[in-house]
Image 1: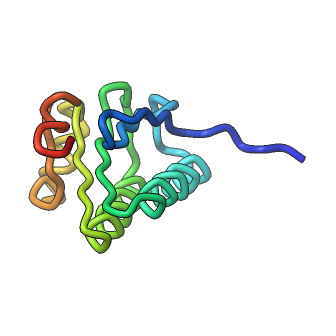
Image 2: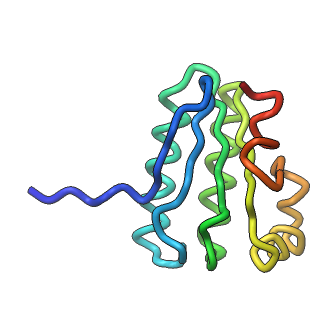
Length: 119
């Protein structure tokens, strides 16, 4: 029986789950689905989820991945939790701005900034 390797790395920072992506390009549909599943399990596993997702290692992000992020954000919000995004490269942040997702997500430049008020 084979197991798919994790598409995210998670570390705990005083009760906040800090997430980094394994891949630099998040464009493959299977990878995006797996990332979504892993992030939703992370959110569902916490009473009041606090998640910081670091995009500093990401070069490309498909629009399908945006839908996954919205689902994760909504699930966390329904559980009185928060998801914050940080380290978003300028070219990817432009997509957030154009789609007005920058108004939905709390975004920061660094993980340290994102952690303020969460931990």
